[in-house]
Image (cartoon, rainbow, N blue to C red; front, side, top):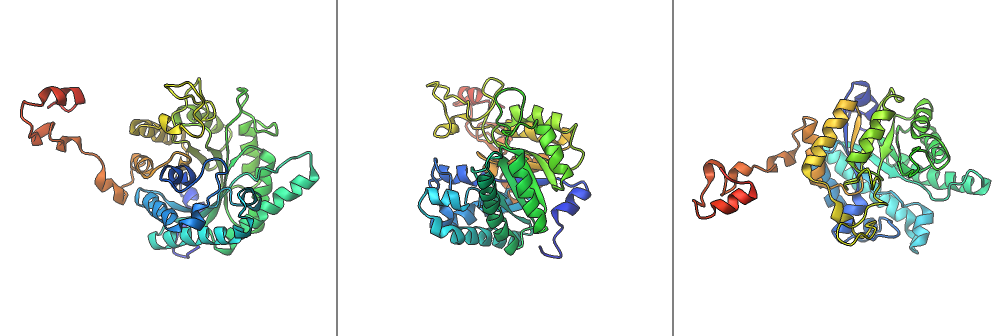
Length: 352
């Protein structure tokens, strides 16, 4: 980390909010450069310029960090797509891209580490394999000098605890977020811990920040994070989906296409995108709760990041292009259409 850059621990200590911008896999799939199914960031190998392009767009929109696109890039996932021999190349390139953007823009440099999919507390062999996979990825991040690591979208407290232990061995601050995917109503991790209890344990074990990410959109994650704030006294994170989940369909796995009624995950999630007013509400709720690490993950895009950043009082470069409907030709002092299209303007909500 640059000696002139204020680190994440000092930012939290000084009561600052960190704007996080994630969600590379879904946004790059939307643009035609990633694949649903494996969810492996092959684009880092095949079209690295597209990864850098999105990274710059998110920083331009107001992100305080630039994340190496390393989620699901461990050897087991690389093996699933027949590219295990490119593990090192992918991780090196992902870190190089994020570090370059972070250094040029002055934002924090981090990496993302997700579930290994092999964690099993009943199998010593799988537990060892889990730690080996986490250690190999975290070692890459240490080599490239990340400011912190996002340990994210984990379903088990135990796996998060292992990842935190490894981060501490490398002396790297860890922001740890669990995915709230329990459908039972008890809101537990897969290994049986209530979410708040699991996060409290991780906080006590030395995580720089703990919280929730993924699985839920603003409407269904806010009640959880508000309740968790009662247990977590230190820095709290909330990085939700960019899709509209409801009380009836509380996670993205439950969403149904509004026309067909067929499950939307993952192929038809665009039918559930958030509006900007949803993001404004989300950011206001996070401010009221006192969340310190805020943002979006899957389903995020630069416009969403800009909306959140501006709601937190930031003026990112992208603020220059915030919509100004008073400049529309059917509305306000600049109206140029005369009365001919008055009815259309009224219908559009653009009437004087």
